[in-house]
Structures are given as structure tokens and as C-alpha cells.
Amino acid sequence: MTYFYLAAAMLVIVALALLLRPWWWRASRRSTSADSLPGLNAAIHRDRLGELERDRSNGMLSATDLAEAREELQRQLLDDTAATEVVVADSFSRSSGIAIAILLPLLGVAMYALLGSPKAVLPVEVQTQRATADMEQLVAKLAQKMEQNPGNPEGWAMLARSYKSLGRWDDAERAFARVGQDLNNNAELLAELAETLVQKNNGFDDRSRALIQQALRLEPGNMLALFMGGGEAFDSGRYGEAAARWEKLLPQLDPGGEDARMVESSIARARERSGGARPGVAKADVIAGAVAPQDEVHRAAAKDQGATKAAPTPAAAPTATSVSGHVELSPALKGKTSPDDVVFIFARALEGPRMPLAAKRARVADLPLDFVLDDSQAVMPGATISSVPQVRVEVRVSKSGMAQAGKGDLTGKSAAVKPGAKGLKIVIDQVEP
Image (cartoon, rainbow, N blue to C red; front, side, top):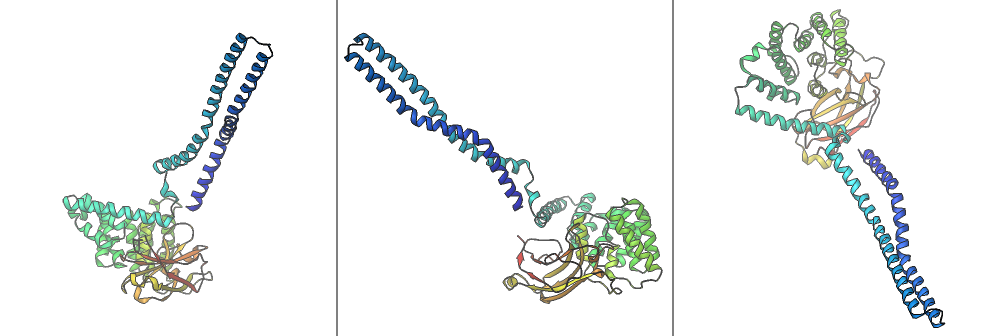
């Protein structure tokens, strides 16, 4: 953002210099001429008048000729004075140039604020925070409207989805419940409610499993129901069934897209486990099959919520698969926390999607804390610490208890490091505005 403003200021200065240079130079010359011409004209006219007086004294001019010559000199003096006034008037163009030099940048800034995109130069984190705050306001207005008109099932479904996108799982569940009978006849809504419960409970329970089965009975080809159904089968150890459901989903996704690659990786893992090559199920793998293809913000929320408990996985591959270090709270901020405040520790890729690659959850009471983030805590297969060249570890003390950034949250982060980095020291020393 700073570089953008500096570059814009330099361009304005260069443009003004090129625009005003000829005008300013002419104004300076005219101003100089205006200062010297009146005195020069007066001196010339005095000399000529003196010559006429001497000629009259010497008898070279008659009284009539002298009078006529004086009148001529007076007319010339008046003409010269008028010309000088024009030059003096032109000299005021310097003031006009100063006014333009001030007003032109101000006008440019005003037009950019009105027609441009000032928010585009803000850091990604600030843009995300503002977008979340705007979304919260819109959702609050929608919730108020629905309380005034509770008999609108479509409105309740919209509100539930809005809560879900913000990671407010309890509110989303309550909104889904108010959809009414339409919920039981809509496979998409049933699958979305099941996804909400999976995120809320950090795994599948009897109710979410029943909702998925009901959604598949209503619409066997529903994308979200197939995705959730594959995750549910994977959680239950039915790896062949999980692969079959995801294979049915794959043709409905854009070939080569991020969602398609994620599903292909999940299918490969399910096929591998169905052959008995790697027994055991990691909780993070279960949630991987339960996160529907949504927008990037929703994926990030799902990963923060779903990657909190991971079961051990087999020995790591030769490539670096983890980062580790120590987190502590700045003494200056201890008064802004309570022991039960939630602490999220997560690793993000330095470039690419903002969704976390691995995450864990703790409490302020646990600080200071040693941590290890590795591929076993990945939410989505293929999106792991070992799959990127550089990561940054971020820590957030969430005042709301949700992974999304919120006003008053306390944060800290590491420098960019390569997978395998150890001994990172992260101090939580910033407060979100």
C-alpha cells in the first residue's frame, strides 16, 4: 500500500513539473519585464522631453511645435503604460499555476476515491477483515428481517448458509431448523445441515450420517451429498464405498480444477486404504471428505474448525512435513485475555490460497506452548505443509471462539520458513483493529 501511494505521488509530481514548466518560465520572464518596463519608459520620456526643451531654448522649435511634441510624447507614454499593465496582468499567471499545482492532485485523489478502488491497495488481511465485518452486518440485518417475517423458508435457508459461511455453526443449525418441512424434501439443504453438524462437532455423529443418507435417497447425484457421503464412508472405514461416491462426484467438477484435484487425491487415499496398505483413519482425513467445494473463505473456516484433533499417521516421508516452535503471549496483552479464550495455531502457504495447511487449537491457559504442525493435521488431502515451498505460522487468540478474524483478536506470526523448520518463536503481540 505504501509503495502504491509513493509511486502515485511521484507520478503526480513529474506530471506537474512537465505541465507547469513552460508556463512558469514565461510568467517569470513577464514578471521581470513588468518590474523593469515602467521605470525604463519613464526615463526615456524624460530624456526626450529634456531634448525638446533644449531645442526650444536654442530656437530650433517654436512654441507650437513644442506643444505638439509634448502631446505626442504623452500619447506614447499612455500607450507604453497600457502595454506594461498587460504584462503585469500576465504575471499573475504564476498564482494560477500554484492554484493548479494544489488543486490538480486534490482533484485526482477525490476522483480516485469516488471512481477507483482504494480498498484494493489494502493488505489481504485487512481486506478479509473488512469483508467479514461487512458480511456480519448484512447477516445481522437479514436475521432481523427474518424475525419479522418468520414464515419464509427460503429466507431461513439463506440465513443458515450465511451463518455457515461465517463459521457460526450453532446459529446456522438453528436457522436450518426454522426452514420447516421444506428441509426434509431438499437434498441440498439436508447435506448443508449435515456439513454444519460435522463442522460443529468436529466429526460425524448419528444425526449427520442420517441426514446424508436421506439427502442421497432424495437426490443420488447431489454434489454436496456425494462429497459428504464419501467423507462419512471414509470415517466408518468403508474406503471402497468412499472412493465410489467420490468417483461419482468427480465428473461433475471442472477437470484440472482445485476441487477436482482434491477429490482425486481423496479417491487415491481411499483406494489405497481399501487395499489395507495403511490401516487407521486420521480425523483430519475424515473432515477432508466432509468439506464441500465452497469459496476459499469457507474452506479456511472449515480447516480451522476441523483440523483440531488428528490421529497419528505413519512415519513421515523423506521430504520435510512439519514445522515446530514455541508460542507465548506478550506480557503487555495478558490483561486483554481470559484463560478460556481459544487459541488457533495454523500454517499457511506463503503463496496461493489462504486456506490453512495444518492447524491446531489450544487455550490461553495453555500458553506458553510448544507446537508441532505437520501433514497429519491437513484438512484436505494434497494441501499439506510438504506440498509447498514456504509457509508462515500464524497464531490467533479469538475473542469470538471462531477461526475467522474478528475485532479485538490478538495475533502473532512467524517469518516465512521452509517445511521442516524448527525452533520458531512466535509472540502474540498485535491487536486486530
